[in-house]
Image (tube, rainbow, N blue to C red; front, side, top):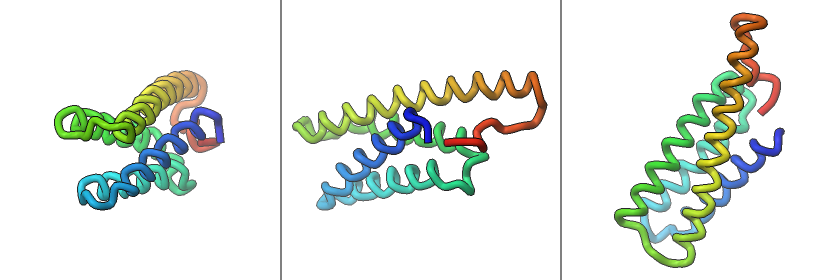
Length: 121
């Protein structure tokens, strides 16, 4: 697994654990399960061909979570810590999406139809 992918999975796992640890609030609990499910999809080999879509889904999920926190989230240490992790996750996902898109464009120029994401996470 590439370092950027490790960062993405790690940040997703950290924010999932933070949300799951706040189990007294059903919305946060469900949000934690969502992050855990997306982290699992990201690393599962059977979804390797769809990994770019999973990245986009995880990016959208993270952005919605971040924006929702701006309106209704708790302004405390754990809230700020989690938003920092989510900001790192957003930057890592955008970097990986752009990088993979560039690789896909190059691959399509050489051999049409190959998905370069299947070789590695």
